[in-house]
Image (cartoon, rainbow, N blue to C red; front, side, top):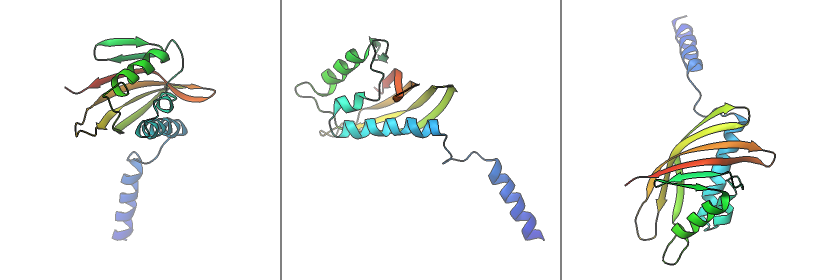
Length: 149
């Protein structure tokens, strides 16, 4: 009887803990966008990486104390920083992702990015993204990225 009681207590405690692997369909779809972005980056496919962003002049991108407006401006910024002469894209991965729905069709994503460059440098930092669900799927409508010094 004591063993049964202990097992029932353990099951109750476990059932009240948030499931680390339980994901909503929205969270799974957003994670897939981010995984596709990292995969495209690691193939040096900047246009593929940009598919995760809303292709609109209303996209906003905050980084390094500057504000960029529009998908084209964001693409140009990435090209200048990672594909211009003497620049390399490196290997990208995301970690510490926290996804919170804000309402129907909107989500907030916080996390960290890590780049491993061929010269051994490892730029990294934090980001906050706002996603919006469109008929074509989830897209980033606002990106605030802060690189570590």
